[in-house]
Image: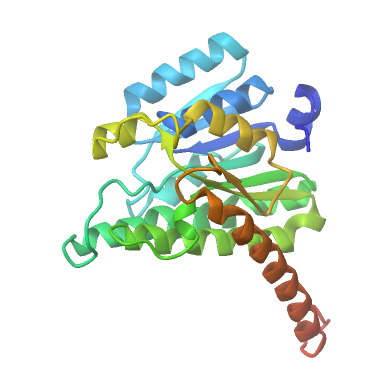
Length: 278
């Protein structure tokens, strides 16, 4: 599906987009794609100077309003602070791009804090933000929730076990939300990205660029935004290298399993008092 034209896009997914993890990489590129289509943006990340630079650039190039909030998503009050910053804003899109592995090693050799951080970034925080922002989208009958995931969700991965597990939680969440919200005007997409060149990956893990394996952050972000309406999930990766060959059978199974679950829950609900008047 082709993304709507700028005015239609802004009508459907605006006025404001909240972009989590926006300081660089896919998050910054995603904010640029959304601003280019006419959305005002609230940029979230820990790095204040990078957010300031991005906000100024988006204002200058796209003529949109750009605000920023410096926040660590692992802080206990992070969700509360983000939702407070959206007070009075018509938020039509949540683009959640946070929760990269950051480091690798065996589960037992890494501190427990690392695993808990993966859970906070990939599970707890997106749950809180979706729960806080999506009701207004449903009330308006339009909007989008986009969670940036990873091909690490395909199956358990050694050396990033907690990250892989957290990404599996995230796609199950997105699929369930898609089934619940698709008829209420809200698009839900889990963008399952593969090997992507980002400044953070190079800085933290020392990973060099491999043109055979890697996509650029800009290309990944562009494909995400162009396919917001094509949920519940979309693999965005070079499919002929790495574990890309797993993508097609995995996607086919997810589609089959999700529909089976939708049908099963419809039958189950018919035998309960779910949705029935008191």
